[in-house]
Image (cartoon, rainbow, N blue to C red; front, side, top):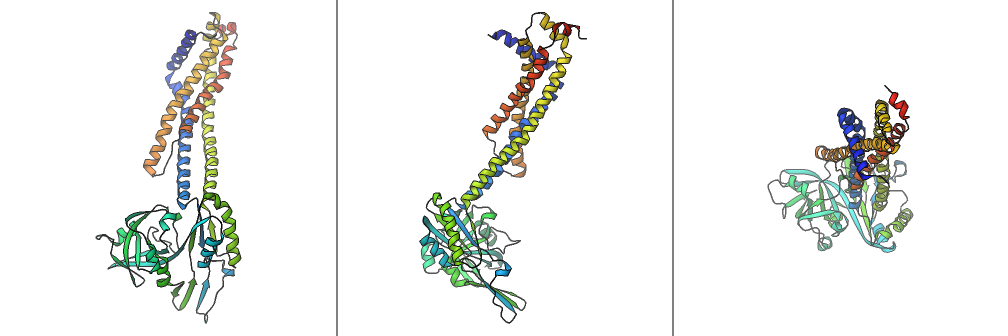
Length: 431
């Protein structure tokens, strides 16, 4: 049975011995401090990066399947040359594709078709590049946007092909620096549209629908109009003139988002959509993105990332533990005569082991506490200085601190045993 008073006196003696050599004790603790700090900081940075990636994927909708039109490979394009002065290509999704998906794929709630046109928008003397998105009234229910002012496109706007539009807030600020955007009239491709609402996009630039011709241009410049209006005003064939050459592209739909009734239907619907499109498209002129699959991949990557970062940081802790063991072994040699005196006065092996273990545990736990403080501060500094999101999790703090305590015990056992195993007579003769 361990005597509590005797144990506490041993603890006090161990702490007093460490305080006699403050600089050496402090330097010994550095390895543990850096190890604990690196575990917490690296996991916090990794957790923040993973969280941002997962949030971007979630914003696409875990119940959604996204299908986009893409140009087929050059050798497989169907081109119709006209007197050698131009070319035309037809590719991509069609209205029939949207109808077939909605009517034949089990579990489909809605299908949102979209047309994306690169144009220039004008308000008096101000002219800016923009992306016109022809879509339907339930766009905000599938794509992550916030309605800031006014309204979004209504069903009746679609029915009567109204010339109304909704602008992103960033575009509106640049277009109307001194006016209230609502009810203003803008001009796109020679046609006037009335502004009925302002929205803010939640998705990051990589998630927003893009027509693929926006290199070098801002991405927060979308103008939403009814799909029927877009089809009537812009047609399905986009013509580009370069000198004496006329190139045309015929695309009915640039994108469609398939919203399933539940995420359980997504896995089964994905191969069915692919099979259906393969059947009705001669070329692979589309790409399919399933956010649910991306989310699972991101979660798996996060776990692997945490393991890698944790392993790298754990190496620092092990190095710190080796440093503690090295110093304690030097202490054993330095304090051989002291150990001999204690043994000669009736001290037991258990007392010697306890004293040396107390010293190593105090070093490791003290270093662990300082490391936790520094490890919490570092991610906050990273966030404040770079804007990168960091997330400090309680389990990373608990893990790092627990490992630091365990290292004190593991790497202190050998020096403690070495000290307790000294022959008392030989220890007293040591100079």
